[in-house]
Length: 334
Image (cartoon, rainbow, N blue to C red; front, side, top):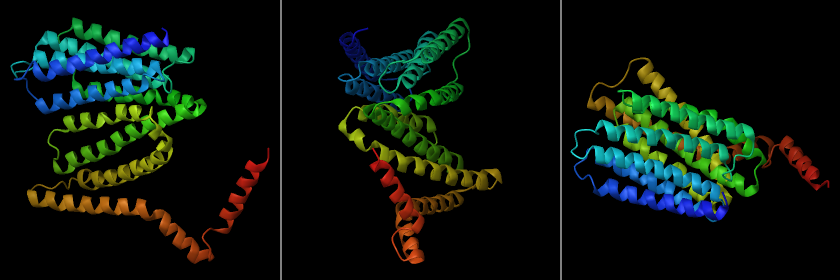
C-alpha cells in the first residue's frame, strides 16, 4: 500500500476510534465500572495520538497504531453498550469485544515485530506476524462457537508472554536500525519500562497492604505509557531517550529487588499485617526503603567520585585513565 494511502486509512481509523470513544462515554450512562472504562478510553486516545505523531514520517507505524486504537475502541463500545443497565455485558456484545481484543493483541505484536519503521523486513517476521493473526483467529472461533467467556487475567498473562517472545526479534532489529529508528525504539522501551516499574509497585502494594483494592484500572492506566512513548519517539524529544532509558532500567532493577525482598519477608514467611496499625507500619517501612533506593540512585555517582578521590588522590582510578586514553586513540585511528 502506498504511503499516502496508508496515511489516509490511518486518519480514517483514528477518526473512527474517536467516534467509538464518544459513543462509549455517552451512549451508556448507566453502565458499571465507569472509572475503568474512562481509563480504557484514555488508552485509545493515547494510541490515536501515537498514530497521528507517526503519520508524517512512518505511515506503517501510523497504520498499525491506528488499528490498535480502532480495535480498542470497538471492544470498549461493545462492552459499554452491552452493559447499558449496569448488570454485566450481554453475551453477544461480550463476544464482539473479545474478538476485537484478540485481534488488537495480534496487531500490537505485529507492531513490535515491525519496529522501528513499521515494516516487516524479512520472511521470519512476516511469518511470525501471520502466525499471531492465525492464533487470534483460532481463539476467536473457539470463543464465538463456545459458551465460555474470555477470562481477563489469563488473557492478560498470555498477552504478556506473547510480547516477551517478540523481544529477541525487536532487539535484533534495534541493533541494525538507523539513529532515528533507535530513538523510537528507545522511547517505546521507556514507556514499557515505566509501565513495568510502576506495575511492580502497584502489585506489591496490593499484595502487602491491600492498596489499591482494584488493580485493574491502575494497570490499565499504566499501559497508556507505551503508546505515549511511541508518540514521543516521533518528536525531537527522542534525542535524549537513551540516557533516560539507562536510568529507568536501573530503577526497574532496584524496584524489582526491593519488591521481591518485601514479598519474600512478608508473604513468604506469612507475616502479612492483620490490622490497620500493622499496615500503617508496613507503609512507613516501604516508604523508607523507597527513599533509600531513590537516594542511592541519585547519589551513587557522587559517592563513587568521593571514594575514588580518597583512595587514589585523583578524580579517576589509574586503570580508568588508561582505558579512556586507549578508547580515544582507537577512535582517532581512521
